[in-house]
Image (cartoon, rainbow, N blue to C red):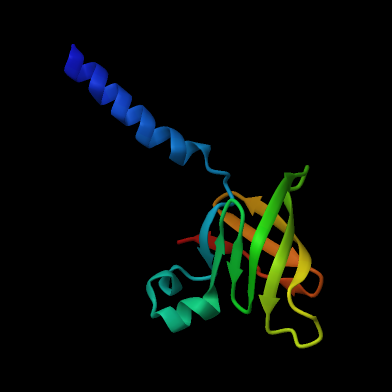
Length: 119
Protein backbone atom coordinates (compact mmCIF):
# COMPACT_ATOMS: atom_id res chain seq x y z
CA UNK A 1 0.00 0.00 0.00
CA UNK A 2 2.86 2.38 0.77
CA UNK A 3 4.39 1.66 -2.63
CA UNK A 4 1.08 2.56 -4.35
CA UNK A 5 0.84 5.80 -2.36
CA UNK A 6 4.42 6.70 -3.31
CA UNK A 7 3.79 6.01 -7.01
CA UNK A 8 0.66 8.18 -6.93
CA UNK A 9 2.55 10.99 -5.18
CA UNK A 10 5.44 10.88 -7.66
CA UNK A 11 3.05 10.78 -10.61
CA UNK A 12 1.12 13.75 -9.29
CA UNK A 13 4.23 15.89 -8.92
CA UNK A 14 5.48 15.05 -12.40
CA UNK A 15 2.13 15.46 -14.14
CA UNK A 16 0.83 18.61 -12.47
CA UNK A 17 3.59 21.02 -13.61
CA UNK A 18 3.22 19.93 -17.22
CA UNK A 19 -0.55 20.28 -17.10
CA UNK A 20 -0.26 23.71 -15.44
CA UNK A 21 1.75 25.22 -18.30
CA UNK A 22 -0.22 27.60 -20.50
CA UNK A 23 -1.02 26.16 -23.95
CA UNK A 24 1.10 28.75 -25.76
CA UNK A 25 4.26 27.93 -23.79
CA UNK A 26 6.73 25.90 -25.79
CA UNK A 27 8.87 25.81 -28.89
CA UNK A 28 7.12 26.30 -32.23
CA UNK A 29 8.08 26.25 -35.91
CA UNK A 30 6.44 26.29 -39.33
CA UNK A 31 8.08 22.92 -40.02
CA UNK A 32 8.93 20.31 -37.36
CA UNK A 33 12.16 19.49 -39.23
CA UNK A 34 13.49 22.88 -38.10
CA UNK A 35 13.10 21.80 -34.48
CA UNK A 36 16.04 19.40 -34.81
CA UNK A 37 18.12 21.41 -37.26
CA UNK A 38 21.46 23.03 -36.54
CA UNK A 39 21.52 25.89 -34.03
CA UNK A 40 21.94 28.42 -36.84
CA UNK A 41 18.80 27.16 -38.63
CA UNK A 42 16.86 27.09 -35.35
CA UNK A 43 17.76 30.73 -34.62
CA UNK A 44 16.17 31.66 -37.95
CA UNK A 45 13.08 29.42 -37.81
CA UNK A 46 12.08 28.51 -34.24
CA UNK A 47 9.79 30.54 -31.96
CA UNK A 48 10.09 29.95 -28.21
CA UNK A 49 7.44 31.20 -25.80
CA UNK A 50 8.21 31.01 -22.09
CA UNK A 51 6.07 32.05 -19.12
CA UNK A 52 7.95 35.36 -18.96
CA UNK A 53 10.14 35.76 -22.08
CA UNK A 54 10.10 35.30 -25.85
CA UNK A 55 12.70 34.26 -28.40
CA UNK A 56 11.76 34.52 -32.07
CA UNK A 57 13.78 34.77 -35.28
CA UNK A 58 15.15 38.33 -35.33
CA UNK A 59 13.42 39.24 -32.04
CA UNK A 60 14.05 38.47 -28.40
CA UNK A 61 12.19 39.91 -25.41
CA UNK A 62 13.47 39.46 -21.88
CA UNK A 63 10.12 40.19 -20.21
CA UNK A 64 6.60 39.23 -21.22
CA UNK A 65 3.22 39.32 -19.51
CA UNK A 66 0.25 37.45 -20.93
CA UNK A 67 -3.45 38.32 -20.78
CA UNK A 68 -6.19 35.93 -21.94
CA UNK A 69 -8.69 37.36 -24.43
CA UNK A 70 -11.69 35.94 -26.27
CA UNK A 71 -9.52 35.10 -29.30
CA UNK A 72 -6.26 34.05 -27.62
CA UNK A 73 -3.66 36.00 -25.64
CA UNK A 74 -2.20 39.47 -25.76
CA UNK A 75 1.45 39.67 -24.78
CA UNK A 76 3.07 42.82 -23.49
CA UNK A 77 6.71 42.18 -24.32
CA UNK A 78 9.46 44.48 -23.10
CA UNK A 79 13.23 44.65 -23.04
CA UNK A 80 13.09 43.51 -26.68
CA UNK A 81 16.02 43.41 -29.08
CA UNK A 82 15.91 42.70 -32.78
CA UNK A 83 17.06 43.52 -36.28
CA UNK A 84 14.74 46.49 -36.87
CA UNK A 85 17.16 49.42 -37.28
CA UNK A 86 14.33 51.95 -36.95
CA UNK A 87 13.77 51.06 -33.29
CA UNK A 88 15.90 52.15 -30.37
CA UNK A 89 16.77 49.15 -28.23
CA UNK A 90 15.46 47.95 -25.94
CA UNK A 91 11.90 48.40 -27.17
CA UNK A 92 8.45 47.06 -26.27
CA UNK A 93 5.96 45.27 -28.46
CA UNK A 94 2.37 44.01 -28.23
CA UNK A 95 2.11 40.47 -29.62
CA UNK A 96 -1.07 38.50 -30.25
CA UNK A 97 -1.16 34.71 -29.91
CA UNK A 98 -4.02 32.72 -31.38
CA UNK A 99 -4.40 29.01 -30.95
CA UNK A 100 -6.22 26.84 -33.48
CA UNK A 101 -6.19 23.20 -32.47
CA UNK A 102 -2.56 22.05 -32.42
CA UNK A 103 -1.19 25.23 -34.02
CA UNK A 104 -0.52 28.77 -32.84
CA UNK A 105 -0.14 31.99 -34.80
CA UNK A 106 1.90 34.96 -33.56
CA UNK A 107 1.13 38.40 -34.94
CA UNK A 108 2.08 42.00 -34.37
CA UNK A 109 1.91 45.10 -36.53
CA UNK A 110 3.58 44.20 -39.82
CA UNK A 111 4.24 40.53 -38.93
CA UNK A 112 2.30 37.25 -39.13
CA UNK A 113 4.08 34.00 -38.30
CA UNK A 114 1.50 31.88 -40.07
CA UNK A 115 0.49 28.60 -38.42
CA UNK A 116 3.21 27.15 -36.19
CA UNK A 117 3.38 23.56 -34.90
CA UNK A 118 4.83 22.52 -31.56
CA UNK A 119 8.35 21.13 -31.68
